[in-house]
Image (cartoon, rainbow, N blue to C red):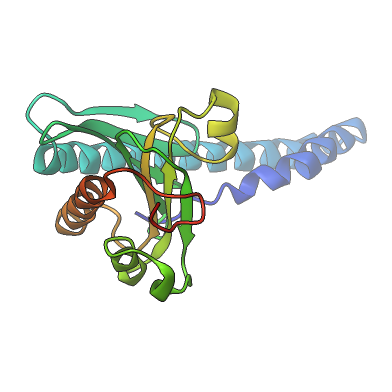
Length: 210
C-alpha cells in the first residue's frame, strides 16, 4: 500500500476565495478552470481511496483465512484505522492497522485476564525483565508491549489508540514494512499466548514478577 496524501485539501482555503474574487472581477473563465481542476483532483483522490480500501479489505480477508479459526473473522473500518477480529485456538484477538501506508503502526490485542498492569517500550533494558517479555524487544519494528488488567473506557481507548477491544488483555504494537505478513503475525500471536500462559499470578506495575 502506498501512502495517500490529500494535499489538495490545502488548496481549498485558497482556491475557493480566489474563484469568488475572480468571478467578481469578471474573470469567470479562469475561475471555471480552477473549479474544474479542483473537481478533477478530488475525483482522482476519491478513486485512489476507493482502490486502497478494496486492496486493504482484500488483504484483511486473506489474513483472516490464514490466522483465525473458520467463521470467526470480522472486519471493521474506521476513519484512520482498520481492525480485524477473530479467534485463534479459542483466544479472542484483534489485529489493527493504524494508518494506510506501508509503515503504518500495527497493533495485536489478545483478550485475556491480566492481574496487573505493565508497559514495556522499545529500548527497555532486557536484564530487568522476566523471561518471555524480553523476547519481544528483539521483534522487528517493536514499539511496545502493554498489559491491561481492566477494561479501558471508550474515550480513553480512542485517545490512547487502543482500537478493537477495551481489554483486559495484552497489547503488542509494531511498525514494519509488511503489516500483513501472516508468518510474522502468527509468530507474534503465539508469543502473546505463551506470555499469557507464563504470567500465571500476574505482574507488578513495574514489570517485575510478583
